[in-house]
Image 1 (cartoon, one colour):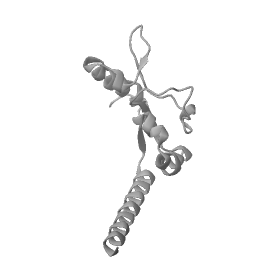
Image 2 (cartoon, rainbow, N blue to C red; image 1 turned 90 degrees about the horizontal axis):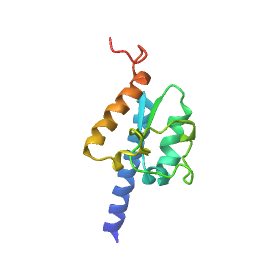
Image 3 (cartoon, rainbow, N blue to C red; image 1 turned 135 degrees about the vertical axis):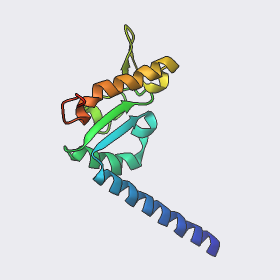
Length: 129
């Protein structure tokens, strides 16, 4: 029984350090890249500890990206309703999450994400010096 107690104590200690590290990283970051998926939206930890801190600070730049397809009308978006989730808008086709893109589209997805979101990151309004 003593072995199990030691394992539980180590596990709790590790989880506590991990939580503290995540909280510190969130408080120090300027930009939050949110890779949105059903698992992301279903995570109680993200909903309770990460998103509230990110959404409450207007100085933080948030880049929500649809990693995997989510139903925007059925799922609780946890406060992300106010922000546009980046999806690839393929010519003449519906929007796509990164996971639904083929290999050529994945390159286009990353390029378009960079182009459309760069203005949020550069103080020059999107123009590189």
